[in-house]
Image (cartoon, rainbow, N blue to C red):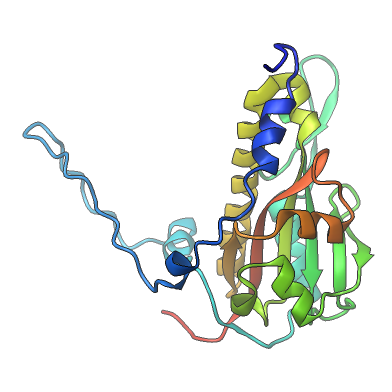
Length: 251
């Protein structure tokens, strides 16, 4: 029985017991049929078709998952923009209580911003290959570890064959207690929602710049966390996004 005032045990118990399920037959399937439920009644309203999209609508429409990246260098300015507009910091704003806060590109429950970005960096101009932690306040990349070898990446990422030429593999890690301390077990949901906002930002920013992405939910948690130097409980990876140049042009 969990204590009523224990706000961390339940979400962390779930998190630690949701390692990937290696259903190899399902993973090997090339496609899946997902039925659309037919719930159209006589009083339903037919919506008008949207016009040919432009701006953000066009970027959303063109976003797709890439499983074949091209070996090509990425300008440092491009990588910098991805970090800044995915989870960087913008302007100082005054709050009603007299405090000031930094504006950020995603919403966060209670304005707590519990996430931290780490990245495998490969073939980015002006940056050595390696693993880095993004520091949003100073807009800097701090070295964490060397770049993984192919066999190491295979152990870390179940999607490794698809991302072998990606310039960035960005891991979204969560510092759970920052949100759980205020919202209790439900804070775990808020952390995951925020990670989704960051991942979608990365996908749309990449598409806007002629890049492609692959979102990664399947990885060996304990190995990835240990390799990044985080403990897997106070801080743990919850999502990943590979970014690079698609080897096949889609129009």
